[in-house]
Image 1 (cartoon, one colour):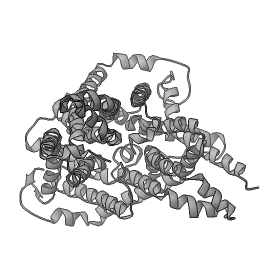
Image 2 (cartoon, rainbow over the protein chains, first blue to last red):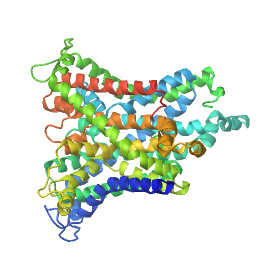
Image 3 (tube, chains in turn green, orange):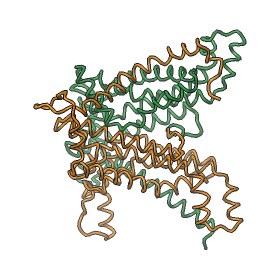
Length: 266
Length: 288
C-alpha cells in the first residue's frame, strides 16, 4: 500500500529524525553538565559543582562583562545607523535604492573570516591597538546591515498613505514620522536590536581576529577552554549559553509578534 | 509599492542622504576600506620579518595554484557541496512535513528548527565533540548494539567535519524550503493526482519545480557559509581536515604571510560572489 497515510508516516518519521539530530547533541551537553564525573563520560551522579566552579572563575566573569559591554554598544550603534539608513533608503529614487540595497547586503554574504582578517589589517595599519574598541567597531559593522534588512522589510509593508494622511492633517514631517511611522516600526526595531545583540554575544570569528589582550569575550573564552582540554566546566557554561540564547530568541520573537518566524533570515 | 513619490522631491533626496550618511560612512570605513586593504596587500609581497613590502606582484595568486593549496580549495568545495546535498536530503522531508502540517503546528515546528540555530555556534560544535569522542555517546551506542567491538575514532576526521557542517547549516536549508513549499497550491497536486500522476511524478514534475526558488535559496545559504567555515573544521577536524578558512587563519596568524592570506581570502570571496551571481542568473530572488 502506497497511500497518503504511508507517506505521511514516513514524512513524520523523517521530521522527527531531523529533530533528534538537531537536539541530541544539545541534550547530551546539558545532561553532562550535571554529571559529577571529572573526566569520564560515565554518569557518576547529579552535581552542580561545575556551575559552582564557573561562579568562582574570575576570568570568566570578566569575559562575560566584556561580551555584554561590546554587545550593548555595538547594538546601539548598529541600530541607530541601521534604522536611519533603512528610512533613508526608502526615500531614494528607486535606481539608487536598488543599487545601495545590493551593496549594503554584501556584508551579509561575505565569509566571516574575510571580514575578520580585513578588519585586523585595517586596525594594524592605522595603528589602533586591538581591544574592546576594535571588537565593538567590528560587531557594529556586521550588525548594521542585519538591522537595516529587518527594519526595511517592515518599512516596505507599511502603507505610505498613513504618513501622507498625517501630513494632510497638518503634521510636520518630523511629527508624522515620530507619531505614525516610528510606532509602526517599533516591533521591527526592537526585534532587530535583540537579534543584533544575540549575534554580537555569539560572534566568534570576527572577535577572534579583532580582539587584543584584555578584550576576551565569552565565545573566545569558550574557545580557549575547548582548545586547552575538555573539562566539565565547559559543559556547564555551554548549557547556560544555550538557555540564554533561547531566552533572547524567545524575547525577540515575542517582540516582533511575527507569525512567520522564518522571516528573520528569509 | 515601495516608498511614496512625495518623498522623492529634491528635498526628500537630500534628507535621505543625511539619513543614510552615517551608515554609509561606517560601512565605508569598516567594511569597504578593510576589503580594499586586503585586495591591495594581496598584490604586495611578504617582508623578511612577516611585514608587508609594497611592491606590486602577482606571485601570491600564482602561489595559490600550488597543488597543496589547490587541494585545500578543492576539499573545501567538496565539503561545501556534500554539506549542501545532505542538508537538502535531510531538510526537504522536514520542510515538506511542516508546510503540510496544520497551520497552528507550523509555528511550533519552525520554532523547534530555529532554536538550535540561535544557539552559539561554538557551543553547538562543541556539543558534537561530546557525542563523537572515542568514549562519547555514539561510540557507546554502537558498542552497546554490537555494531563495533572497539571504539572508532570519529572525532577529528572528515566525517566529523561533515556532520558538524550539516548540523550547523541545516536550518538555513529548511527555512527557505518551507517558505517555498508552503506557497504551493494544494489543488495543483490534487489535479496532478486526478490526471493519474504517480506519487513520484507528482514530486518531480509538480512539487520540485514549484519549490525551485526555495531549493536554490536554501542551497546557496548552506553552500556559502560552509565554504568559508572556520570553527567546524578547526574543532572537529584533524590536522589534515584544513579548509579555506583555516588556511587563511593559518597564513595570517601563524605563518604571518599576510599577502598570501589576503590573496587566499580574495579567492574565497570571488568564489562566494560567483555562487551568488550564478544564483541570480538562475532567477533566484534575493536570498536574505
